[in-house]
Image (cartoon, rainbow, N blue to C red; front, side, top):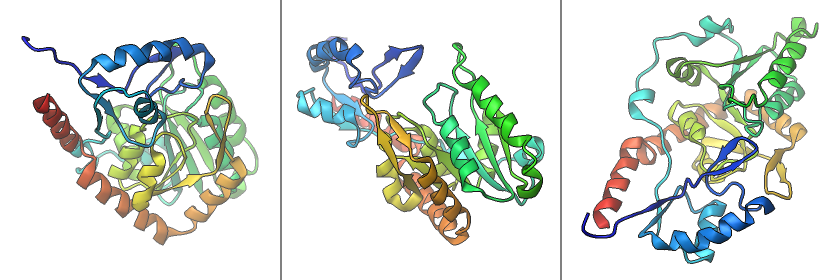
Length: 293
């Protein structure tokens, strides 16, 4: 190309303890101080910097340090995946009763996606005839999969399950099966510790699944569409969020009992996604940026 052309996508990779983080997740970690100090220099060489929202630490940091032209292009979810009902009955495949209240969590077993917290919230909520379905792959370094399986077995084998008929399912699903799980779920539970702009929340909205999530990344922005609720939590010294298990359990129980509210949130989320956050709309915004440069 004759002219200098470039753009900085905000999903800058940082590696720690075998995990890949995006959106400057380790901005407050002293171990990455030199990395971000260097980034003050080279990030200014680009013609534009793409952020997924204005409501995360990456955008704030970029504005504070004068990092080039700021452009907001959100994440999204695909119309071809979520506008057509899946033919697969995931409840039947996984042995989940048709009338059970199905709570879904989707996230790799990286130790920071909130699997332990989700199971704690589910247990403390003391629901009846409910299933927590955790869908996620096992990272190459092991992550939290073994711990999750132990917690699942301990919970499911408790004699109390004969009374409340609850169950935890921990599994890895194919993409079509995961889409079927979204379609079948009554609520998306996501007490993650760190995010930038979690695609799983966009997918929950696209599947008409209301969510209950920690205030991580730009989840608060998405909740303002009336598509879900934020759970209480506290931040540690590196700004990782830790859910308040007991408070979240009360929220979960209240939502499970309020069918009208769930239906309204589901519709709100779907409408917001379809009008703003399809990959088709996102692609158009990228194309417009390319042309402007």
